[in-house]
Each structure stands twice: as C-alpha cells, then as structure tokens.
Image (tube, rainbow, N blue to C red; front, side):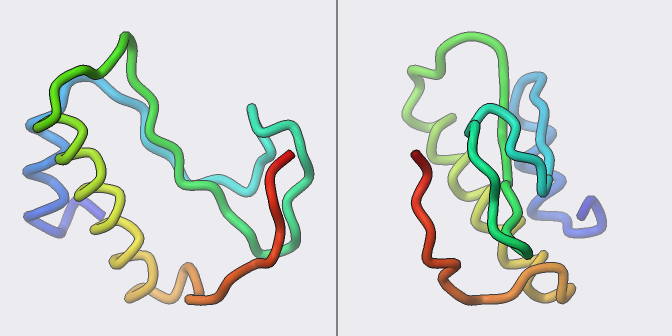
Length: 83
C-alpha cells in the first residue's frame, strides 16, 4: 500500500490512526459471509473538520481501488446486511 504515493501522502497528513483490513466480525457483532472483509479506519476523538473527513474518504477509496488492482478483493455485492 505504501508504495502508492497518493495513499502514503494522505496517510502522513492524517493524525495517528489505525487502518486495517480484516475478516473478523470485530465490533459489528455478526458473522460475515465467506470472502467478505472489513476495511476499518479508527482514530481517537471526534472528527469535525470537513477536510479531514474528505481525506479519510479519499484514502479509503484509494485503498479499495488498490486492493482491487492487487486481486485481494473482488468487485461484487455480498448481499448481506449488518444487524
């Protein structure tokens, strides 16, 4: 991921954070269908700055695009809802 300059620049511009891709249910509290992953961004405090929120959304979008390019994820709808 960090090879991508645009992803690295956005990550460095944001404050301390935790970013992970996991197959764990974690805080969602429900079992995920086989092959469904969670992309999670977590930080301390409340984000009120609109520019920061925009950066986070762009970062997540770029990460999803990169994971798709790498073949880690597939582009399909898993047809399930979180409870």
